[in-house]
Amino acid sequence: MFFRAARLGDNSFFRYVLTLLAVIVGSVIGQIPLVLLMADYGAISLEGLYQEGASENYVLAMMLLSFAGGFGGLYLGVRYFHHKPFRAIFTGRSRLDWDRIGFAFWLWLGLTILLEVVSYFLAPEAYRWNFDPLAFPGLVLVSLLLLPVQTTFEEAVFRGYLMQGFGLWFRYRWLSLLLTSVLFGALHFMNPEILEFGALVMMGYYIGVGAVLGIATLMDEGTELAIGLHAATNIYGAVVVGYQGSALRTPALFMLDGLNAPLMLLMTALASAAFLVICARRYRWGNWKKLGQRISPATEYVINDQNRIDEDL
Image (cartoon, rainbow, N blue to C red; front, top):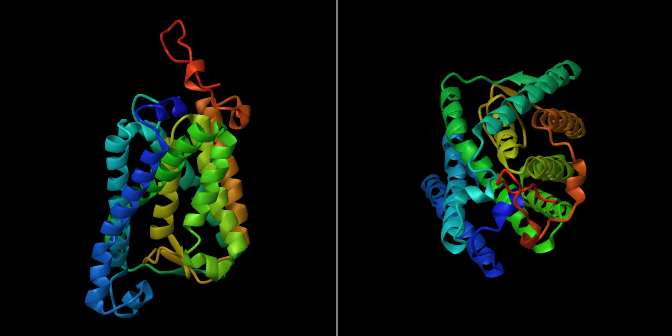
């Protein structure tokens, strides 16, 4: 279903180039408010903004506007360059399944909290209460309104648009999964965590998370589970437990003075395995071999007796 939706409209290579350019232009336009804020404070970096006294919540909101601009560019490209419904890059279903998004969000949030409790008992001295009654309500508002825009945009680009594009070009799910996971990791290569905790561990984390999101997308024939998981990850990191050196600098409830990156990688791997197993049982994925199977060309699709298109081979 997912790659059948990808075939809608015009999918010539040139239109992918135009759409990605539109995404870049939209992202640059979305950065204008942040640039103006930096100019107003006389700062040349985000760290300079914080040192000049800019509100962490306000800076976060300005940063996230870039993703809103990119989202706009992606929408224009899909609708007017590819001439396909925007929904097609998200799911092979007739509409976006909000129940799946909500289930993934709460499941991942629950797994994260469970493992956070384990981490706390392993090293309680690493946690510091950081509640700011004046800043926290604003943080919750910004996080709930704008962080889902950022995370959904990234899922639309990587697990939607590019995963479908690579699938149409190379015809193998595993290759599409590999390429989008590596590119997702590369997107985060300039994050401060890379310098703070080491490129090997952090790139393993980012690429690994990208792979989990990609597996969920390919097995479930849509990005809904990935959207929910990604949103839960970033909202939790912004609102509940932050750490020094994080790309999301916020007045979270708790702060970790020292992040154990290898432990975080292990915990994420355990949570990811549990997440995939639970989703597989709930949504009856069944055939895991499909991740390595070839994507059938359009001429191989048939219509069954119930007038429904059969699942991709």
